Amino acid sequence: MGNYWQRPLGAKLILLLTLAFLAETLAPWQRVCAVTSEAGDRVCGWRTAYEGSQFGVYMAILAVAILIWESLPVLAPRLSMRGWPTAIVTAILAVALALATLVKLIQDNEFQTIWAWIGLALALAIMFIALIRVRYRWGHRGRDRPADVEPAPTSGPP
Image (cartoon, rainbow, N blue to C red; front, side, top):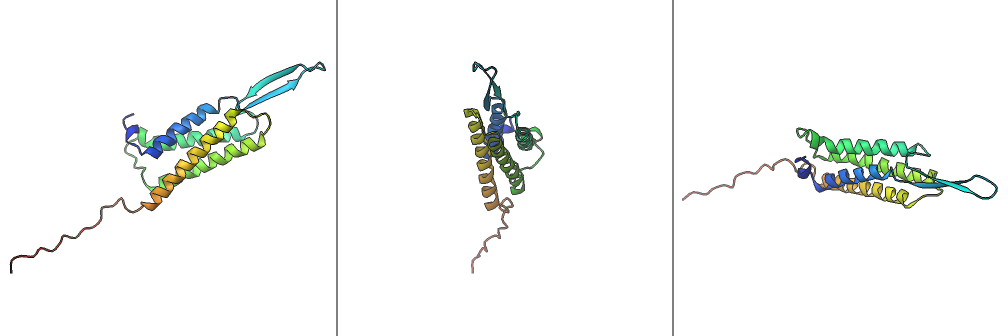
């Protein structure tokens, strides 16, 4: 676990937000009610993100993929995952997660609770942090190598 604290801030935030997103998908995203008799008796129940359209399952798969991808350097410290291609993979997964969450909200757009909107906010936060990491890594690519510095000419006594 000591390797976790050596990760960049963006990687730590993505890991924590993805864990929060996975936990939040177990919360009730919809409150569905049905009338059971002519007297107007209603039976209400909760639906999590996994019920309804299949995009809830896609969201979970993408979140687990992000979690595994970002956990690899922590679990296997020999992996060097600090370049911009690594950030691009995380960003692609994060954009797909945000899109799947948005499609889930659009398809199951009735009786949504605040938990559905919190899930969208978490997915968007993961996406924005991943995109900021890509922008940062893209701007610094190639700078990981030490620059070739020529020694300054020394002038001796004449």
